[in-house]
Length: 240
Ligand code: CAA
Image (tube, rainbow, N blue to C red):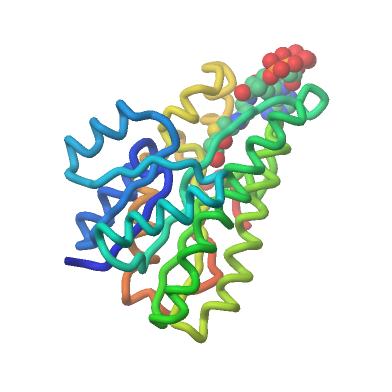
């Protein structure tokens, strides 16, 4: 059995591609999901990857979830904080609920996911942490003050954990996907989406597997000297 990897939001979209890529790379993968039972069941049926239901916005649920995964599969040595949501609205229309839901899932959810697993990584002197941020955390985005704030915050988390984890053999890195062909991006009105694609030099949306390959690289044993970094995979849309 390979190292145990937890991928949050790991049964759909980019997360599903990450789960599969890590399984293919020899990891024993646990994919958590927040609510879509049917999608999770289908994903497990198709891939054989175990799925676990909990909300990353709930700290106690994350503690319990990590315990359950470790009881079933062994110590979690790789964590990919991928779960995320959008609640897009121009700022003057954004409600406090839209703000808070995104903060709770995309930012506090990253804390909640990693925090219970971190002490074990320190004790074992090995860990791989990857946070899925976004091009919109790097450049901001019309109607995404909430989402962009969380994705920029995720980069701050990674750069701090990189400094704290380095002496314990733990790396922490971020991947910033651009616009990827997932349900999240397909939910953007077609006209707006077409305008966005026109701004991507590659002339197309990315594929989830193109993000998954970045993650598989970062969590490999061979990537031990890479920490605090950000891989941008956005078809040339934005450079930092
Ligand atoms: N730049 C400048 N102006 C823009 C704009 C933009 N990018 N997008 C919309 N506008 C304008 C519109 O043309 C419109 O102008 P008028 O009032 O003069 O007609 C105005 O802003 C907004 O119109 P509405 O008040 O009707 O907006 P709305 O309340 O219906 O909201 C929206 C519409 C939610 C903003 C919708 O356009 C939308 O979903 N936009 C996409 C936002 C986006 O890119 N989200 C990313 C999702 S994918 C993701 O998040 C994954 C990732 O990490 C990359």
